[in-house]
Image (cartoon, rainbow, N blue to C red; front, side, top):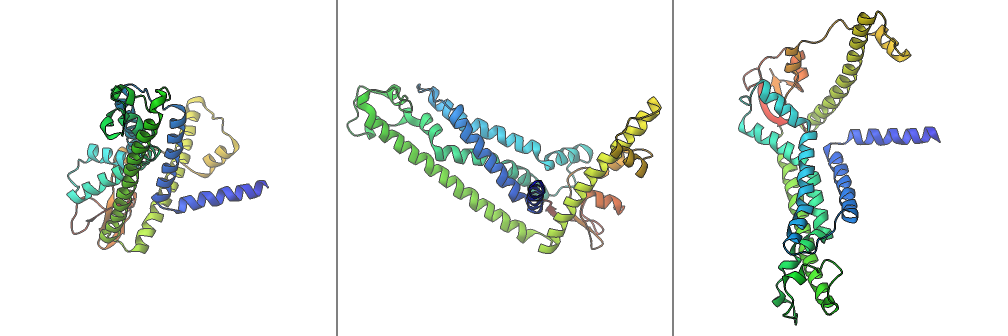
Length: 319
């Protein structure tokens, strides 16, 4: 049984690792849906008070969406590559198309969670009903008592209303839920069209064939995993050597001792090398041969970042 569970987890791990960023975006969207449902059940309570309803309803939709957007920007590697690029080299090597592509990639990925949150909020309708109930025109309700005004309408999302207004409450909530869900479906449609157009433009404007683009994705994944694994081992061995030099010995576990005996670490890479492999990378070719990353470019000894006869900028960003 344990072996079967292990194989299933391994299969799922390989499945998700083999897919593109759409899988990750889907997982982010599902996580956002769960968070939104939990928020609606536990945290959302309409104040049912004039002027407060509108602020609270909009905040319930907008503030979490803004927070999710900022988190998405922070978690995106392209963000910090861009920061490093501007800090070390400036943005002079970026064409307008490359800059637009870079910001579009960052904003597009960061928008997955907030758009999902907004859509689910609108489809549920609770925040929208809370925000706009007091703005419903009493004249649009047939035979609505004239002695009741916005103060009463603001209490419609709650239960404490006069008994003779129950039918009007149902009408107002039904009308506002219709509007909220309509906006939600429209937002889904707009996002779907934008995603479709973006994917079409990406493949139409790509300088790479479909197979080469797939190879590039595999190379990036392999380079990242190997670099992270090697950096972990290198840093551990370097730390062990320094600790041994200070104390005269180092307390290593069996696996760590095998690593120290197998690999030899004499020193660290100088800062210029780290700077050379850090930053935003657009697909480039050198004398017709592709350069798939900054590390690949550094390993081949290619100098410069801008377009030229030996370093052609293809204005294509790794997704």
